[in-house]
Structures are given as C-alpha cells and as structure tokens.
Image (tube, rainbow, N blue to C red; front, side):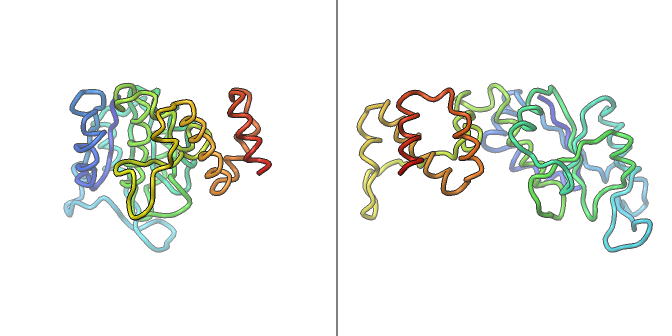
Length: 245
C-alpha cells in the first residue's frame, strides 16, 4: 500500500514511519509512506502557504496554489484524497477497513484555520475526523488514520488474527492482560490464566470483556447483545449470567 502525505511539517511523521510496527512494514516494502512538504511548492517569495480569509475573521487559511502544485507533482489525479478535518466523518471501523482495501491514497494535512475550499472541491476530497475536538493541524489525525489502516494491511502485524481481537473490532472492549511476575504488590494474576485450560481462559476473557463493555461502553454492549447468533452455548450462558447478575 502506498500512502502520500501532504503537510508543512513532514518531520513530525519521522518517528511514526520509521519506528515500531509501521517502520518495520515500510522496511519490508509492505507500506510505502511518501511525505511531501507543501512549502516546497509555494511560489511566494517568503515561502508562505497561508493567507487571510475572504470575508474576514480570525486565523489564516492554507492557499490553493501550493497544494494544487504538490498534488499535481505526486500524480494525485484519480486517486482518493483524504482531508483531515474536524467537520468530516468520524473515523470508525468501517472506514478503516474500506481504506485498507485501497492500493494507494493521499492524505492532506491542513493547518491554521483550514484550507481553501477550492482544493477540496476540485480534488473531490473526503473529509475525515478522528473526534469532536480541534487540533492545531492535520498531522496527528493523519498519523492516527495511517496507523489504524495499516493494522488491516496483510503482513503489517505479526499475527494476522490479532487485529480482530482488539477492543471495538471484536464487538466488545478487550479483556484485561497480565504478565510476569504472578504476584506484584500483593496483587495476583487470576488463577484461571495460569491453569493451562485454554477453554476456561477463553470464557473468562469473554466474561471480562462483557463486564467491561457494559460498564464503559453501554452503547457497544447493547449492540452486541442484539447480535449473538454466533455465540457458543457456553458464551450464551455467560452472557445470560452477566445480564441477570
């Protein structure tokens, strides 16, 4: 998968694209993340990429010309363009999965008060938000989008099944995890996890996920209990105990 990122702060992406999971995927050739500095395409003698907005108001707006020139330079014609924006659709599992099926796409990171609307109109950009709050630029949201999408790309994760077990994607919040030592500060690892009985471990984890989801995300819990046709007999029994307990 190839992801082109247009930004005025490409250096912000270096730790994300060179280290850990994404860095390994890039080195293996599974991901190709190309960073383009929009400032390299401005024709302003002061290297500016922003200007005052027509109609007045506070803040500056990213101008159309350097962004257009950068998009033409990377050959963005016909490719999907995503603009990270607080007014866009909230990034969720369905959108992440949809993007993970693409061979390539382009992300535009705005800054200041946003970008000239003609950029979005001409390039048919899809606006995507990571939440109902405002950040100083689109770089951090772009990193979130890249990381979430990359997890669904075959070969990026060591275990191809692990992404499906994550919180939310499984339909429930993830169960608690424990590691060595078995006892720490008077707190012990639940006995079932060291029993070696994988069936009991699976059912314990399922119960914990149910309890956590009911407490913290009742919306997800309500959705889950209405879609229980794929549960085993033992899991249905645990669900009934949680509902009636």
